[in-house]
Length: 235
Image (cartoon, rainbow, N blue to C red; front, side, top):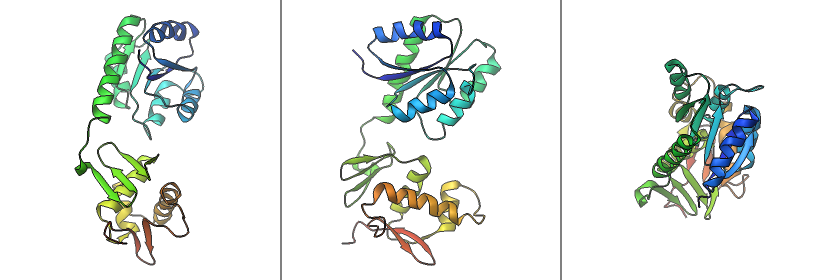
């Protein structure tokens, strides 16, 4: 039986109970929320493999929740809606949903779509990777294919921006990159007095990967110029 965790987000109790019966029968672990705000809280508290997200809900609707989730998370999202017009489906998919199911729906079809999205997600994110995908500096390992980072075999959770900064520094290890350069490469826009933005992200990144942020082993500050990643060849 499956052990993947699914988050059900809908303010209609009957819909939640119906979906719950079918998914529990497939062996999925289930978490429930009645609006977008509760969904965001559940994502912070539990490892979630797939989200079933209703569009029309109080406090924070499914569209707003989907956009917020996609800022940091690529977990598959299946949206539910009573709206069946093509423009509604296109809107849902364009903001980051992976699939769109209209109400009323056949529960067996929804289960089939859940299985399909989970298979697709695993193929894209848990495929075997080669050493070419990894940048190794001492006990820091950056996997550019799976976007995972480990320090001493302990996985570190980074935001997409933090990962992009770390990857940029690692690809250019030993080379000093100015804050202007880092901002333009990572944010993909001209540098406009954004030194504080880069500094804040570097600080948060160090808090996650460095044992001693006062004496960082990996991300070095080159005063008056910028930052560099320690070279794998350095002792």
